[in-house]
Image: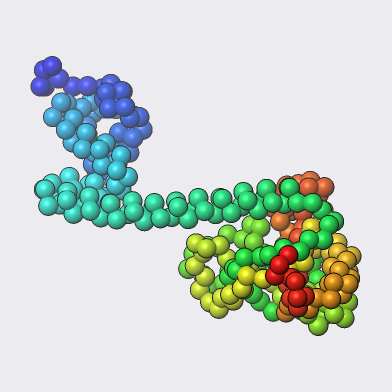
Length: 281
């Protein structure tokens, strides 16, 4: 191969398994300039002496190094400079791995919630042991007719967060114990957000211990919940149980996951205690 031979941009792109658009982008970023540009056609040509630079660019791009960092290295090419940039890039990769691991956990949580909702036996009261969890909550009297009625409260929970919070399937509403005992099931006293293990929330976080709950799932949304609260309260009374401080109601499948209301699933949990053999159940 002759040292002075010129290669068209398309041929160079094929040799290095990149697009002509990438070569033009590298040129615009000041990383590599064509050896010759035909003034009449605008065709770009590269020489063999540019291949080493192009190979370096391609290598650093595989490592996901930003173009401005690559340009800085090409301008100040040196072993120490390369070592420093590779170490910084390694730190960035470690950070991305941590972010991806958190994303994977969130996917697992949502998949499990969807599976639990789809396999849930509806309109049947269950006594379940709920593991400990963290929540943030907001005392806010509201009567949601649809999922849109919760939006303002959600935005208030999200305020002042450094990172965007993901609320899908994690926002619930609750009725205070006094209102439950009084049979007032048509309004809610609080809005809460269940935090995943990997969530970092700026603000007051409430720790809920492992506890027993009476629970019921039904096909529907919040406005259809009162009759199910009545069923739960009758069960609590018949079983001689005491109640916790507030109910937890979450629409596990709603408009965020499907357009079909027949597939909606909402779950209500009321913490209970007091029955002697409860812990043996």
